[in-house]
Length: 217
View 1 (cartoon, one colour):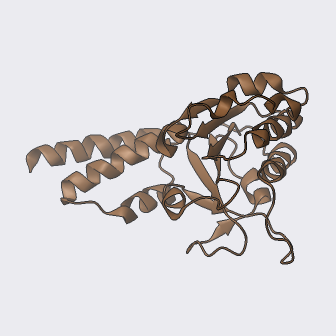
View 2: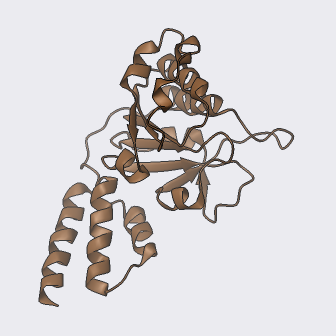
């Protein structure tokens, strides 16, 4: 499945070089940095760790929000440490790789010190973790990307025809239309839409119907 690596507020520019190398190892090239720091991608020395992957450092995009980074993705998976309580079921990297191949996947990683915030995770469709030893549960950011890249490369499912899934931006618009009809924000509505696995056509029908209902109010 097409995969985008999304890095939330990375602190260490050297890690970007190591991540570029890990991505190149397994044929990934789409990645985005969500950071308020416009100089992050200009730090010298990143090429030192991006062995034979310097072109990826030229292609990485920087955006301001997670919503912008994943707008065109149909499945957004946030990552969290195994021992962290996220309040919902989590999937392992191998299970992600076995998902429908027609998805456009965004894998979202938090910063090196504290990972993804609760607000970040709330915007993700699902949450994943890498099973690790209790004695040393945390992985380096580049190591974590490498594990997921490996699983996605060697356990991916063959391409199969199927309806195009609704992307994150469209699901957010449907949720907003629902909120307008119901007269207030209902965070659980987005989770319900995600679980429904709407196709693009179905989501567009929902939005058109909700817009019509809003006009009658």
